[in-house]
Length: 133
Image 1 (tube, rainbow, N blue to C red):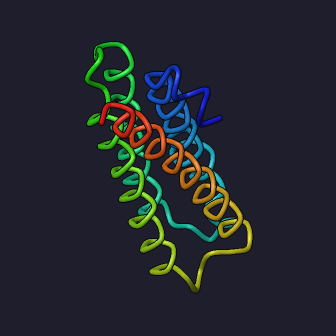
Image 2 (image 1 turned 180 degrees about the horizontal axis):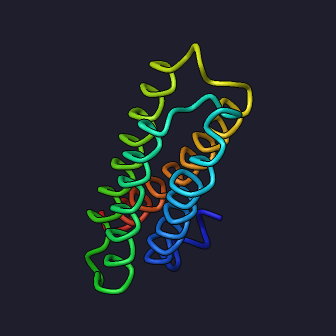
């Protein structure tokens, strides 16, 4: 997979934006209707949803407008994704006593998916960088 994105690194922005859009949809529309079952208060979901929407816009702008100098922009979204995961982890542990198993499953899955994406983004950015050296 890394080799595939190495050939077309800008497509990572598209993948990132679609993933962030899915996250925003799940947080802002789906999970807000199941706060009791998930044990996650709305006051946690909406700010995370807004952050995800910002990432959607950033990644789409990068996908459509960034030319050959995409590497620093890819690093920015990878670091932003790490920040999002850390912020989400903080929120999850803050509401530790109320989150149900379903909440843990959702956020655990989200951490794994975003973590994998960050790994690919940083790997592609460093491969291209090393190639230029």
